[in-house]
Amino acid sequence: MNKKAWYAVGLLAAVGVGFGLFRVVDVFYPKGSDGDILVRAFNTSGAAVVEANINAYASDTGIFLDREEVTRIVTSLADGMELDLDGAERIENFSGDYNQLSVTGKNADGYGMVIIVHSMDFSDIKEGPGGFETNIVIDTALDGDIKELPGMEERISNLVAEHMQGVRTTSCIVGSYFESIPEDNMEAIIGSVFQSADAVEVERAIYDGFLSVSAYTPRIGDYIQMGGNRINLNVAMRYNSYEGRTYIWLGSPVITMEY
Image 1 (cartoon, one colour):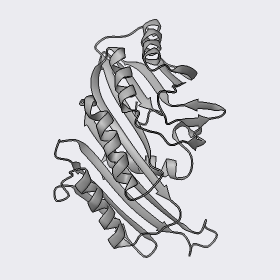
Image 2 (spheres, rainbow, N blue to C red):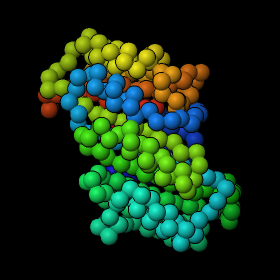
Image 3 (cartoon, rainbow, N blue to C red):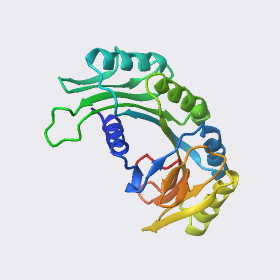
Image 4 (cartoon, helix red, strand yellow):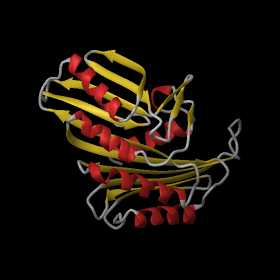
């Protein structure tokens, strides 16, 4: 499995046990599409687009799927995303109490995709949690085509919802500036991004030239609960001295891409 596939599995596992990024996500609330707000906010930054990513995840602790059912769902999702299954990398693991199928490839538009469905039966595990757990993940890389992000986010969410309720999505956009941006200017850029989205800062982290700021905006329907605060927009910036570029990440509700 390639790096993107392993990353999707890691994210799935993190959310599946009830913790989100940074180990502080307590509750993930339902939403509508936030893609339009995220794209407009990114355009305010003035950065050049590097890549964009959408991840959709759903989990159900009440069902266990057999091999045929797992395969059927993966095939249905691949068809809906126009992913060529014949040319895709395929990883499978089917047993009596654990069934998983993941496919990694590109769709008709050339977007990289990972689709994962896995189902577990814990009923025969001594001192285990008992019950079942089934998870669905679609992870899509749009490269620099961010204008497609709102429509693709809705498309992926609807596809997963056909098989499982409670879909949670995260969208991220990465951009860069071909120069070193001073910290004061970083603050101004992040401020303009938040202003464009009517967002209010909630908390921030600053270390070794890295700046990450989380905020909440009522214009995005989804949010996570971090302590007593709602968060649904995350912006981070840092300078890469090896490349001579300053990078900016925008994520909703949080950044889920590596940086």
